[in-house]
Image (tube, rainbow, N blue to C red; front, side):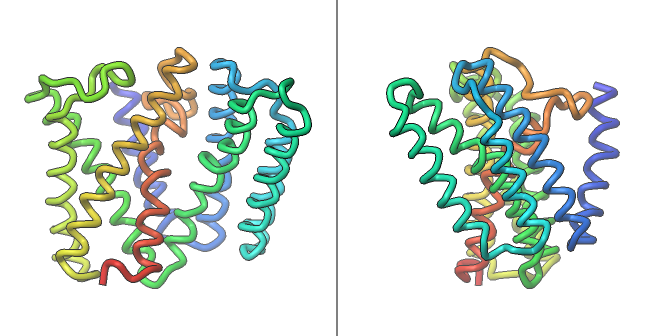
Length: 262
């Protein structure tokens, strides 16, 4: 517990500070996190027998991240489409030696721990992006905290026992309620968006965050492991700490880009 608290006291302020700085500082941060997440994801795949060869995946992801760091952002989507064609083309040419599950996991290795992390940077680059990044941190952390404490006190009905035996329906609702309260406080303090839209976004963000948490738990179950890694003392791996964030970041980004929050 001491390691967990110390990691949170050091890691959370550092992440917030780097997000506040933005620019190349944040770009380098998300690149490092993406590479660490990729390593953990590939290790989970090996333990779950979902992947055997990863050299091509690593080379492509490093190329993609290099283009990102150099500022060639318009090339990122075309490169992602090239990866889609490449990975499933290799599957088609080598079927049945390469199973579909392995090809799919290889494609997801680029999307999940790498591409999704980039949305922290892209969100920060939007007008008022700094404020909305802090909104994401607030809602995701509020969801986790509310779910843990209210689930501990009131939790009786298991949410998805085969994936995460400790999570309860009551905890999930507690996380949702906490997110809505913090969403209201964010709107009152930051004066961003209209109240109804921010509250709806907070509900969606909380639900998506919990789905991201369950997704990563299911991945670990398939590999029969407790943590995705050990890079963060007391918390496990990067994917353990950012599972909800990875699902939420593109949701909030596109909600702002599409003008859905007013």
